[in-house]
Image (cartoon, rainbow over all chains, first blue to last red; front, side, top):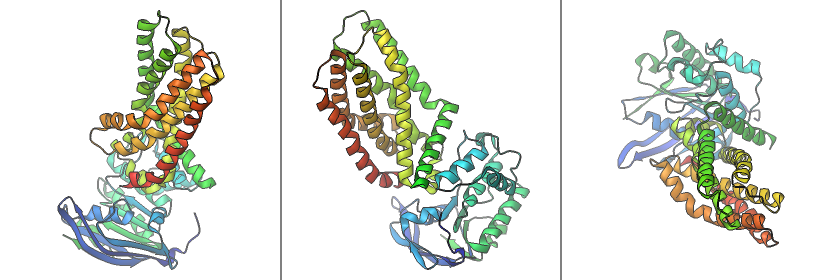
Length: 211
Length: 221
């Protein structure tokens, strides 16, 4: 992956409108942000938080509106957004039949990166899974799965990190790990997360309320 | 380019590793092939079958044994909710080529088991083993190339199995008919095989090129 200036990443979300069938979930949503900023998306159930994150991640095409990502002053075409964005979502699972280490090895290699075993283990340490790397992902508890998903999303050092309900299924220790990772990412990238937890909303520099 | 190849290899290794641990597709593939072969052997093994009958039988066994396994690679990604992760991490071209290579490996495995068993159980020997293997390999390659894009298309549908069979049939006929004809010639001998082999070479080239162009839309929409 090419070396980029992480201090100059900007994201523009412009007039996003989306609907499922006849039900409109997002109407003309817009905001922009740059490296070092974090945005908390909040709103009642069904207000379109997850949908908005999926649209920003390029997993869903909005019926109207545009997502523009630029790095070091250069616009990134929408096909290449994938290289710079990672999404942690309850709807995106890792592989039950691979161990924690194998999952991370696979995801780094398939996204075009090379990472040593030591580096992968250090990421597992970071999320508190240091002794469980050789266990099958399918045997993890829901909290451990959430931690591994977070490690998978951050190991490739994305410029834009999207977290959908980042602390769901986590105990207090797990929440602390997530908050640390969010803080670290905020320092040099863009962080956008969706939550309904009142004590997490304040972690966002700005708040976008949907619905 | 080497990073892209590495990504494809990573996906194939992951699929092989998961397959060896769960035997989700392999069991269906081998069991169906052996059961069908035994039934065919018991009912028709004593008869003196014509080369065209042998060619038809062997391709019917290959087709029906491989259907479920070939569809499974994409269906499993959707059902286990890993497809979204793969969409975020891997380029569509990597996913298409990785899944195609995995399908080819599955069919190669099927052929390695099926061909010797068929020759022994049905007491038949092709005039030219090399030509016979060539027909099998090219036909299977065509089968894998067409079913990869269809598997991606049906993986999000509700009735995946039935839809896969229905969509596959018209797309697979152009590869099945020349495969059967070429295999018949390999059994009985003759020089007119080249025409069929040309079709078997051209078919996957056309299908893979079109699939490669369409895959990103099929995968992301």
